[in-house]
Image 1: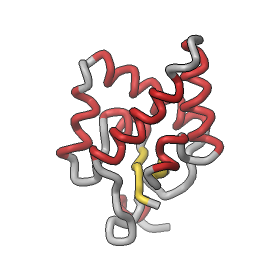
Image 2: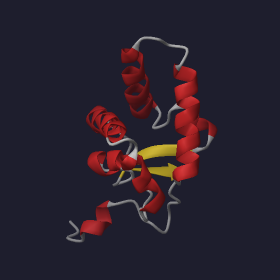
Image 3: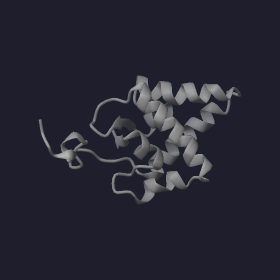
Image 4: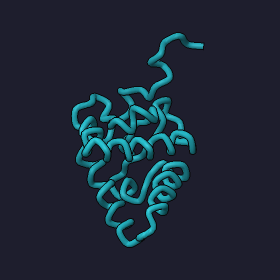
Length: 122
C-alpha cells in the first residue's frame, strides 16, 4: 500500500478540471430545467440522484463535465449528499463558496472540498 497521500487522488496530469464558466453554465441549465418543478424536494432528489446515477446532471451532460471523487471513483450517496449540503452552504455565503472554483488550482468549490470531489471534463 502506498504511503503517498497524493497517490489516492486523481492524477492532475491525466485530468482536465472543469472551470468556473463551464460549471456555472451547467448549473444554470439545471436551474432553468428545475424551474418548471415547484416542489423543492425535487431539487434534492434531482441533484443527488443524478450525481449518484451518472456522475452528471443534465446541465453537466450538455457541457461534458462529470463529478468524481478525488480518488477518481464514482460519487456514492454519502458523497452526493455532502456535496448537495455544500451547495446549500455556498448559497448561505451568498455564493462565495462557488467563487473558490475560479481561484482553486483543482477548480474545487467549497462544496467539492467538503465532499472531496472534482468536476472533470469528459
